[in-house]
Length: 261
Image (tube, rainbow, N blue to C red; front, side):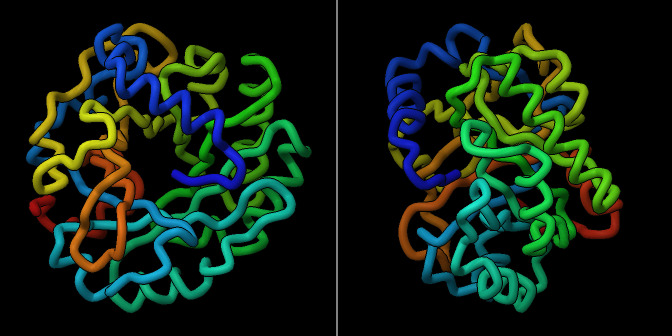
């Protein structure tokens, strides 16, 4: 996902992807929590103001089952395209959710969550997401901030949030964080920044089980940030989600499109 002013985090992810140490060590992630085959997993993209040109009616034909849209970042930024992107994805009859790029270093978790909800970040069919990548706080402090965010969102709208993060941060093995977010969406790029044919999760090896807070497995895996999806101008993040997460997220009422190229 994309945040403003996150060069350090981008460099960290790039370095990890190029060296391959995350996948090799098993620390980064685990296999899908429900044990699903790659062919059964659901393809979802996430967008921000960087994806300013999208042919919405083409996404479903590209095998995209849902879209996550950046809503906010901290207390001072709202995606200027958020409202129009929500309208666009709704015009294509695709389920959507929104994410808040976390800023634990710059403000209260409660105020951050309130602002996210106030702009409509929790209104989508898919559950709200906290994108946790950057923090000048230490691991336990960052985890506590995120837990407060999740608790406030639940208080305001009665929904449990999903956490987007990586397995290489100080907070990644925090048991309290895992308890606050029943589902985790992890980022790790086995091909680095090289395009994966068909943007298909079956083209890459799945994660192996890992120790740590989410050792039981991931609900979502962002396996590339340089996807080339029909209808989207430029590169886009592509993720695979488990059927179990999808059923929980949609109440089993939305049948996903086949996740093929």
